[in-house]
Structure formats: structure tokens, C-alpha cells
Length: 126
Image (cartoon, rainbow, N blue to C red; front, side):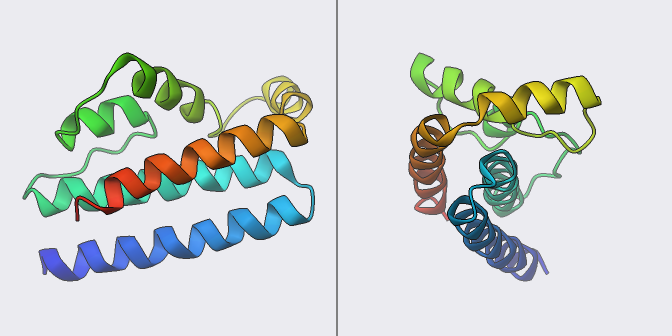
């Protein structure tokens, strides 16, 4: 059961990455980054489950990485804090507009590459 759940989360995360890449190509940078956040969240939750732990219902990547027993240096901690801000689904409209303006192409390129590296870091541990 645990193995199947981990596998399903990996499949979902990889589908999310494809969606994020497609949204980037369409210049929907804010939504691309939002989906990248979801992909990282899914892969970390897969890692948590693989350790035999219960996942917690949070979008806070730092909390999830700690639960997944993934060591955090200052750089990774800072990156995860920024990526957590990409989760705009339940945010207020003024925050969404602010993030939309912030998520220009240069910002999206930088953070998409960062997300890809972080995703790979976790994926290699599964």
C-alpha cells in the first residue's frame, strides 16, 4: 500500500512538472511557478510516506522537508521559503496580483531552474 501511494505521488508530481513547463511556454509564469510548488510538495510527501510517516496537510515546504528528514542548509531553507510563496491558490486577490507582477519571465526562469534542482534532489532519495 505504501509503495503504491509513493508511486502515485511520483506520477502526479511528474505530470505537474509537465504542466508547469507547458504553462511557462504559454507565458503564464505565475501559474507555472504555482504548479512547480505542487510538484515539489508531492515528491516530498512521497519521501515522507516512504519513511513510514504520516503526511501533514500543509503547503509549507520547510516543514515538509524537515518531516522528510532532508537536511536544510541556509541556501535551501531560503529557496524553500520563497517557493512556498508560490502557493497562491487560497491567497487573497491583492496577493495574487502582487505575485502575478513579480513573476515575470526572468524571475520564472530563475525559480523554475531552482525548483527543478530541488525536485531532483528529493527524487534521487526515493
